[in-house]
Image (cartoon, rainbow, N blue to C red; front, side, top):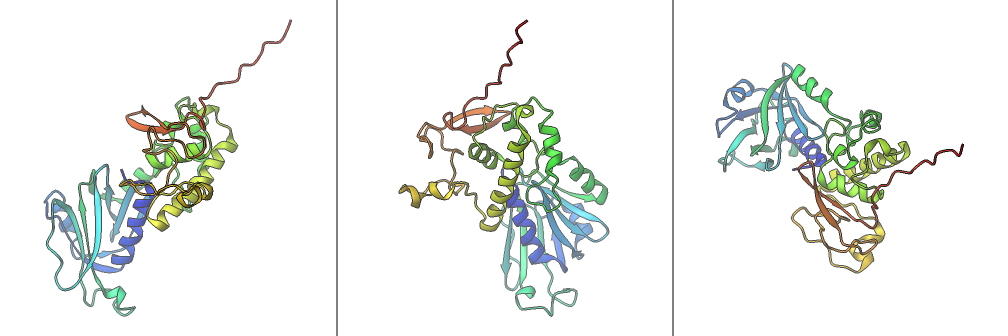
Length: 298
């Protein structure tokens, strides 16, 4: 499932390609046809992401809400002449309409380029009102990639919960945008047992993880890949071959089951937590044991 930085990148790319331009909206697959008809020919205002939710805004406080889910993808491409024919099951297509309705027509040649965006395989694609959009956002936790994020909201939930911190970090109502990769990696970087109850963490530990997520996810947004290893653990620094994985990026534990930890050489372990694979190093992330308080001598 795409993590939050991917949705924020899509929001930026959609805004760059379509904001302030009249667009054609269609549903070649047919599942979004009625809603597409209402938006066809309108100006696209812009797009934003909150966690793994993507909102594309149109006039009249109308929002196309998109959740990519496990296999969804949104491809944006420039074209010359007529838009290319849809390929596969395209639920939503947005294409620019060059002409006098393009508010950016006098800005630059790049701004006048024609673009098409095709959505396939998404879990959700629906036309929402402003009220529905706001209700969705209200249920979500703070997003490390948003300037208006309030990390104290996540801490309030974590500090009261007996659930494992490895599960809480993946709960979008606690923390928005963090997926399996960032979950595994930030816990490793801070040497925290994924099964440790949330309410046993110290406030300073949470703040350090939040600050780290802000940096890591902004790096992911800038590079469009997830790299979490520190400079001393890069392939160049360690003299090891680069990681080969379709997810890309240099990581400590994610999808490295059985391989030696880059720090302590212990084999990386995997278990299932709340239906998702959990990755950690038993050497660097020692199992949490609560301290026993001795009873006073009478």
